[in-house]
Every structure is written in structure tokens, then in C-alpha cells.
Length: 290
Image (cartoon, rainbow, N blue to C red):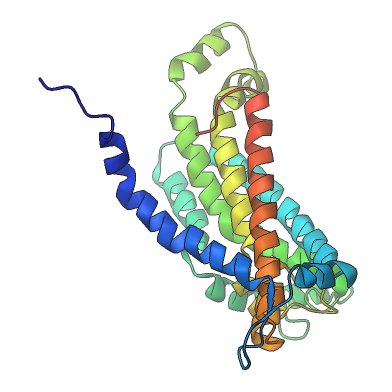
């Protein structure tokens, strides 16, 4: 048999690398170049160097958007992982009832962001919404979930958690079913309680799965746009203006392609750093992430 040529792996990777080059790295390079220009899509672009980045930092808009997005992401990642793992442990049982619960929870993830946002806008309406009716029935004061700047960001983040919890649950279920039953049985024979078995046997083997869920949930939270556009339009008082929505505002409302591109570049860098740090943290705790 003839020895395999060293170039074969690269030939097999060529289609994927070509797709990444055309649809990821080339647009990113064009965006980086546009971030160094001033262009309103009506006149000729003008080279301004790093002025767009300076304007975003001097005005404080960049730091405010970054802070809101990080706060939003913390709620989404922690919430989705906590509820997803808890539900996975609860419904990891045979039977039609548990199968129905699994399907019901996961169905929210399948529905589009637009449909989810419209549903929750109706539920949270302060006058005609179901949540407001429940509050009135039990004598609680009226709450402006989407009109109070102190509550709007948390409310939108909770809607995002509600949507992606089903995804986290399914991934954790796959991780739970990949753990050999013999390990749990051995722990039970040694007298370990349910919590001790989960803490010392199940959770260490779920760390790669948890790293995957955390990273994908982080990326999803940073990409939030539809739910913000429909539920709050970035308000009230810009309390829910996240990264992607800020980019949308700069390019479509302010006609500032340069500032929008600068925000997009910062968005890419911050998200890449956070994902890398997150994966590194999970590796340091033991186990390579899947």
C-alpha cells in the first residue's frame, strides 16, 4: 500500500477552510477596514483611522453597551445552565409523562425568537397581559416589566433563558446518558447519597458538556437581537440596548457604517476572548470540553 501523502488532510479540510474564508474571515476583514472609515452609505467613504473607536469610547457608549451585554449574558448563561441541568436530572427517566415534559420544554427552543418575543410582550402587557391579571388577583402592585429601566434588561434575559433552557436540557440529557450506569451503582453500593453521587460522580463527568452548554449559551446571549427589537426596541432609556442592537442602530438609524463596524469588531474580539477564557476555566477544573 502506498503511503498517504502529507497533503491529504489539508485537501480534506480545504472545502471547510474555503467556506470559513469566504463567509467568516473575509467579511471580518472588510468590517475591520470599514471601521477605519467614515461612511454614511450616501457619500464616498473617508479614511479616519481609529477615530470611530475613539468616539465610541469617549462618549461612553461602548462601555455602557458592553456592561449591559455582559450583565445580560451572565443571567442567560447561569439561568439556562441551572434550569437545563435541573430539568435534565428530573426528566431523565423512562415513561410517556417524562417524554412529554421533555418535548414540551424543548419546544420553546424550536419556536422562532420573533414568536417568543411576541408571546411574552402579550403576557407581560401591564394592562391586558396574563401576568398583570395574576398580579391583580393576588393584590400585588403593577410592575412595568418592559417599561421600567430597572426591570427591562432582567425581563428580556429571563425570556431568553425560557427559550434556550430546552436546548441546555437536551444537551445535559445526552451527557447524563453517556455516563456508565455502573459508576452510579458503585457509588450507591459504597453508601453515597443521591447528592454525593451527583457531586462526586455525575458532575465531574458532565463538565465537558457543561463547558459546551456555557459557551454556546454565551454566544447566543451576545447575539440577542430579535427579542430586543420586538420587546423593547433597546429601551426604556436604552436599558436593553445590547451589542447587536447597538450595531443595528448605528448602521440603519444613524447611517454610520464606520461606528457600526467598529462595534462589530469589538463585539467579535470580546466574544472570542470570553469564549476562550470560559473554555480555559472549564479545562482547569478538570476534563477537556466536548
